[in-house]
Length: 238
Image 1 (cartoon, rainbow, N blue to C red):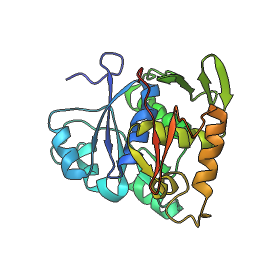
Image 2 (tube, one colour; image 1 turned 45 degrees about the horizontal axis):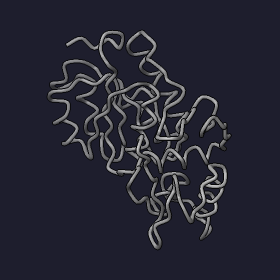
Image 3 (tube, helix red, strand yellow; image 1 turned 135 degrees about the vertical axis):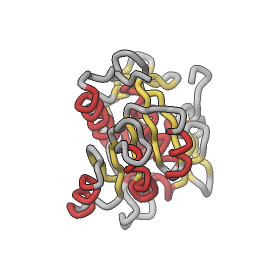
Image 4 (tube, rainbow, N blue to C red; image 1 turned 30 degrees about the vertical axis):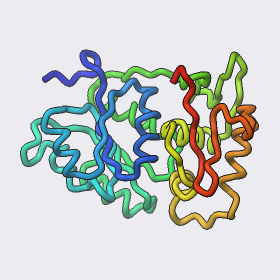
């Protein structure tokens, strides 16, 4: 099977057991026009690989490290598949160990969507010798999210977001229709070791809603689920 990005749609395998994070990775890579499949562990990923050859693998090192020899073309892997590793430990020792195991780049969780996308596109360019397609803006119903200019357009109006607000919007939008708990938001945007103020998530949601002109009494984009968290409200066009 040919694997040149210029001849076939770009394919990415996402190995991540935290559903909210996996969905963020997939939504972000839509800017690179990737077709994504995901797996919750190495065994599930191996099943996907048995009949599907991706151009890139995004691997959570806590659950997918056992897959690395196969992606490197060792022990039955026919072709080397470049790897972007995700880790929640950002120290130098962890990153060097990941590179020694054959990964092409490392991103520390939490990450910004623009960093993940830039590194993924760079890996594809290096590994396959050609630039991957890049769409600066993606549309989610009434919202057009421009990752390059870090802004959202609604009905022709341009709203500029901070990096954290953009990450929050990606997290909620990627999990459209699903409740994302406050703990999941904290883990994805601040990290598991962050000693959070009790209302830090609510404050940032309020700030994002204000920019989206989203009245919480009649939510068009972000609905509050009392006692649980928040849910992105898909529109008919989504």
